[in-house]
Length: 104
Image 1 (cartoon, rainbow, N blue to C red):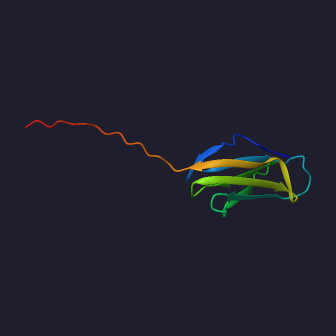
Image 2: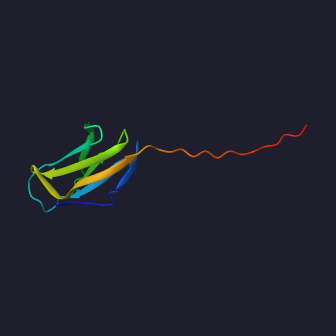
Image 3: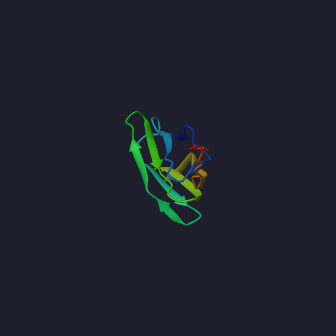
């Protein structure tokens, strides 16, 4: 069993993170996940979804900036590559301004 896919080391606030866990050959057991914003010691709401194809999707959306630590377990034991650290940043909006001249 292993976490797979493109787990980005950096996210923006409000950007969904999706982690796929391969569990087809792991045998009976349950995938659990806890995501903590280490900067605020706040646990983040996380969805663990069985895809019924031998994989599980773990999804969460960070709501504040900080360092997020994900701990994915199977049967109570952290899986290989199941401890993930991501940095979450505030979204920076860029604005484009157009200059107009109005002649009368």
